[in-house]
Every structure is written in C-alpha cells, then in structure tokens.
Image 1 (cartoon, one colour):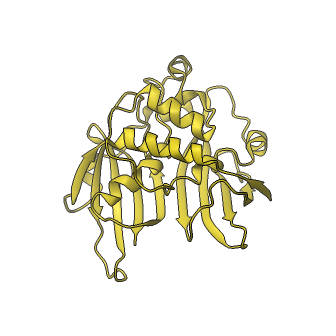
Image 2: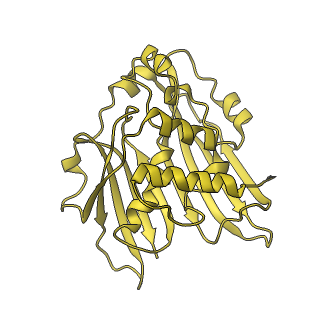
Length: 258
C-alpha cells in the first residue's frame, strides 16, 4: 500500500496528447485513462525482479482493464493498493492488480493488466487478425488516428514512465527483428474514450483492451466502432472498438458508456 498524487499539469498534458492523436478538441477534464499516469510506476522494482527477461526476449502487455466507479482525485493523495502475481511458469503472464482509493476510503478505480515475456521473433512475426473477422456486422462508425509518430509516442512514454526501449529506440527494436519501434499498447486505451464518445456521448465506466499485434511507430490506425447489441440498462451503451493497422487488427477494446 502506498500513496501517490496525480498532478493537474500531467492530466492536462494527457488531455492534449489524446486530442493530438484523435484530431479533436480536448475532452473530459480528467480522462478515463488518467489512472495510467500511476499504473506504469507501480511496483517497478518487483516487476523487474519477476521478469528479468532473457536476451532476445521482450516484455509485452497482453491485456489491460480499467473500471471506474467514481471520480479520480487530482492534486491530492490517493491510496494505491497493488497486488502482483508472479508467473506460474516461464510461459505464463504476470498479473498486476491495483485499486485506487480516495480519502473517504472508496475504491474509485480498479486496474488489471497481464504482462508476458515473449521471444522477440514471435512478436515480430505477429500480424494480427484480418479486420474482416472481428465483427459479423459493419461498424457504426470508422475513425482514424493521426500518424502515431515518434514524438507522440515519446510524449506518452514520458507521461506514464514506460521505459521499454522497443517503443522509443528504433535501433533496439530492429536488433530484435521488429520492423521499427512499436506503439505502446496502453496508448490505445488512452484514446479509446474519445472515439467511443464520438458515437455514444457519456462517461466511460469500463474498458477491457486486448492486444493482438504490434503497430510500428509512424503508422496511423483506423478505429472501427461497433455498438454492441443486447438488453443494456437504460442510458447504457456497450461498444467494441477495433484498432486496425492496414487490413489487420492490432487491438480490440470493449467499453461501457453511461
């Protein structure tokens, strides 16, 4: 258990970055993805001890989930309760869970992530699913990001403290067999809110993001937005966002907007 503070200037920098990536005006005062400003710093030492990755191996994020039950405090201490589950085997993921608790003792945000050490050659060979296989019906809307340049990626990694060199060092990425530095998957979580609200205005309360294939820095990404059928509560919308690089799926996000 520890206490952290998310400063308003970092939240403002996140808003500007999201606006630049999605090509829109700045959105919510505290973006849904603001908890990620804390998450990359959680238990860094333990993470390194658990995953001392071998040569030719990289640490990748497979899955990220954020659940928001209340407003995230800004410029005031927030209690962070973290649990790290070590991999059961060399092939298993490491699981990180973090609950953010406000001054009243209420859990306002829950974060869950799965990280896995994989052979760099396996990551380089991953091409993702054909976009045509992600949904039986066409999308409600289709949007696109700005080119995900090295400058945008560097702004993200500085904000969240992501020190994985495959995101910012093209030479290191090339040495591992990748086509270039790759976009951090969590950046897709940061921009999902803006794209979801373009078709379903409201507050995002839940996000589950699955990473399928790497996106090389410099590429734009198309975002297919599907409003999911079902008997949702009044005022609730469930959406699926499919992030497409060329004609292949890079990530899939399921969100709830209320």
